[in-house]
Length: 244
Image (cartoon, rainbow, N blue to C red; front, side):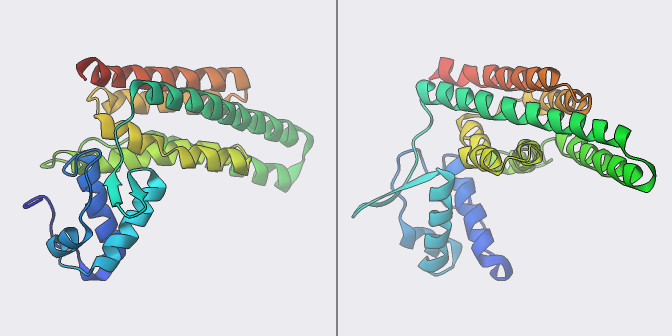
């Protein structure tokens, strides 16, 4: 681990330790399936074991580490091809439904604007426009961070990619659907396999097509755009399994 981590800043200790350990796992500096030595990690980060344990508990909820009785924590194994296919299938079910539902809500609010008059109609119109604008902002994804490599280079991309998908699910108005999409932690699991360079530019354009389809208020168009994006993103990850 030497040279891979900087000492954690005291002012943001819990989050800093979490980010540091997550980077180790995402970069395979802690190999999939490898046991995690809490005391050794705490010494490297120059902290007590307590924030390390807290970080590992958070990472367990992310599905990136596993805890076994009397054995402690280990880094979670990588997705198998079967698990990868199952994850893609779940995303197709959940996120296509979410996109369709958001388009339905856009259509419903559009119909409501037609029935309203005056200030209420204008306020409703402004609110919808603001929500679509927010989706569009989140849809555009950042380039790699200059001078970095590994997970550090794609952290911002991964976080914003997740924000877009989670926000779209939230806009569906179905809290259980939103919660299910968030709990998949799909972005962490997929980008832990590898990060296809083809994601840059391509994923953002696909996101924007989803927003454009949602804005039409046509559920079929929104669902089709989301399905196309998820299948294309899955195809970009397939070379990992071909190399394995």
